[in-house]
Amino acid sequence: MVADAVAVAVVAATGRFSAFLSSCHSEGRCSRRFGTSARGISPRSRVTMENIQNYADKRQIASCVHCAGETESRDHVPSKVLLDEPYPMELPTVPACQSCNEGFSLDEEYVACLVECTLAGSVKSDDIQREKVRKILAAKPALAARLTKARLETLSGDVSFAIEPDRVQHVALKLARGHAAFELNEPQFNEPASVTILPLTLMNVEERTRFESSPASGIWPKVGIWPEVGSRAMQRIVTGEFWVIVQPKRYRYLTSVDDGVVIRMVLSEYLGCEVRWD
Image (cartoon, rainbow, N blue to C red; front, side, top):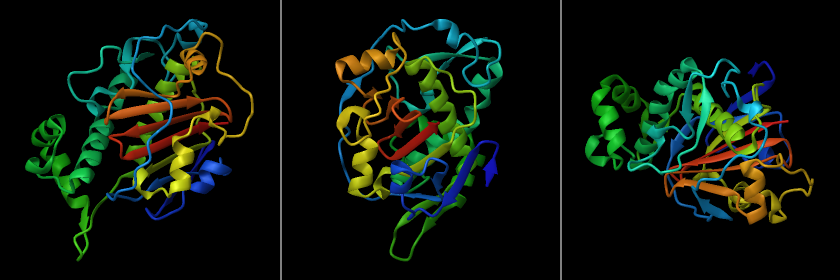
């Protein structure tokens, strides 16, 4: 399925991720099902959320980072529904119009609940660890029923959830646009070349290592392109910091301009997302 400039291929959960990470930048992928298993690799060059000033040309981010419309509000990146209270003191925000700021809310709630229910293997309140998700599911029985219907269990007891790819991709793209503006000072208004969404547990060791690696690790090609002078991303390169932990075990992200604009995000140390603009 091709929409404007972005080719979005939806593949089975057992599909390969390496082709996208290595060379295939015209396609993105979204796993049809989310399930759990264990395969852990620690990300490199982490830094916790801190207040870094943007010294780049702020005129580049003077409009809504999602639609280039009038700036009427500040949008949290990541959205608060993906985090637990108390929130980080230096939570990133970017300019947004009111329509865009409010227009992602339902899909963001869906993704937050989907990830947590997948990790729990259940939609039942007693099985859900995140209090915020428990409250959302209690307040929105239609969403709880939707996720209950999406729950799949094999005869051997393996649990997975059939996902709604468009909603997950909608949130991933929103987050990526926010991070591109906040870190790189480069809003991305065009459609991306690819959007890839896959649980970390479905990556093999090589794929996971590449996903976690920073552009300066030697695993990426040495293109020699640096972020805009004065941008937050440029300052992080100077200090050797690439993965930014907004909240431990809940949300982290990486930005790069080495091979196009690349934004990677990890939700609840489970769901890996990559959005790429050529």
